[in-house]
Image (tube, rainbow, N blue to C red):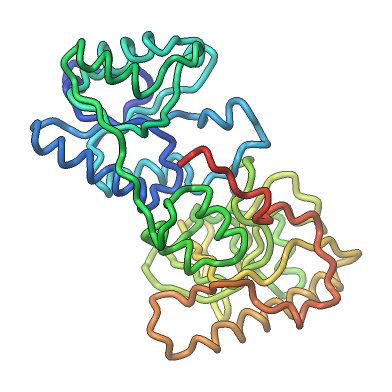
Length: 349
């Protein structure tokens, strides 16, 4: 397994591969089907499978903060790609130099001179090149000329609908974690290393494990009933806030997790958090007393949610809709940006 950052790091041993190109955000079941399609050709040609991705993703380069939120960080994406058969991941920096290539220049420099590709699998709507001439038709023509195969990806559907990253985002934003897991082929999670923060939670009797998030648009934002998995493999229910902590005025997004009935030092340790049910959006309070009272209501709501699932034979108690807000009826939401209407994006697979 090898991660290659940039064309200049390719070696002669990296040439002669089966390749596919895309964002692969979330590495959902549609992506997994593409990887299976590639593995079939890799086995037939006795060639390694190479996945080409971009960093940042093209939509992020052009749209900035208006780009759709990511489902996976690059580190997690690479791990998932490897888990599903990729032997090499070529990560190309998406910058002015790359975006200035014509369609033919991209094929020559990346696919032919760089990878020496034997077979390519891409979507038939895949577009590339500053001249907008790069597409499936051009790839097929160059493939015939240069002796490599080109085929389009097989459409993968569930319940008659194509699986896409935008569908997963919409489901997560709507609080349907159960359906999102079906599309992903795994439970959606957030992970990171616990860091020391302002420790304000301790001052109001609610200690939290704080995991910093990348300064990018958030897939989730608000308060959730969660299950946290620690380094030792144990799982603990709790409640978490994802966002900017408007009462405190944080400039960087953070995942704050309070584990129920837990004692221990988590600083410096990795933690994986599985959101199970959405409780509410972020709220800006006038003072810490109001914040503490709302946190107590959130804890009670999360505990009731987990109690409702007692005895249910599910690995994780995933909701298919947000938790009813009757116990938060007087809380006023604060600019919650994770609504389904702005989470969806139909062009990134």
